[in-house]
Length: 159
Length: 148
Image (tube, each protein chain N blue to C red):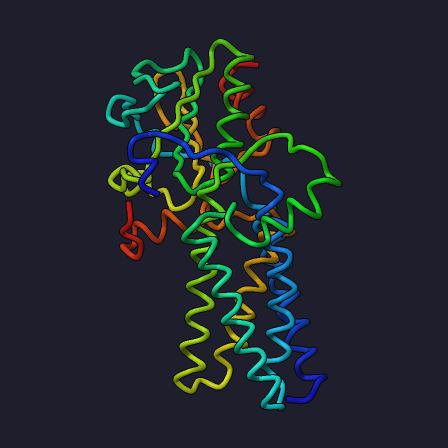
């Protein structure tokens, strides 16, 4: 986010890409939620591993930007050719912030479960489901709603 | 946990998420009256218009839009208010990036972006819009300040 300090805006991206990604994460969070609440140990482990996978994917988006995300590649290959060119482009920094929030939530779930909180993974999956539902189906923008509040509270210090 | 219990938990989660989404959709972008009528000094805001500092208010209405870098709806709002400005010569739209101006964000109690203050011809705050303004909301503000 250093580019904004000198007033330049990074190249725009197709705004439908991040929403497509949020839809995949939405479905993934449902799978993780059900597996995590299962009594079967193997399913619980699968839920844990899927949450780790989600965290890795969030990390790619958070550190390298939404264009580097594998879902973005999927979107360009499978969805965009059917939709045509976007009406307008979007700044990549808002979805990048949302990816960082996703990474934080997934990481909290992984750590909670690792230290023995029984439903750590399920709680994180529930939070991810709620957030991605708002993003994918209501065009809710995490960066608009919580970034400034977090920054004012001193929780985010960067840039 | 039995399957029925899991399903019930998940159903509750869906209802909660959709409910939150509907409430947010209904509440965002509406104008609230501001009684204080605070005088806003555009110089102190370091308000920019196409990269140039602005100090003079619009002849009838000034929209002061607070934005950050990580706000996709700020771009859409800037475009909408820019179009309103282009259509009505008595309207001025300025954008203030508060990403690194937490003093301003604190002063105006901005928690979400975009947050737009609607000023009258003398620069006093008349109303405040949290979130991307709904189009009819802008029309109503213009009516109140006698632009249309």
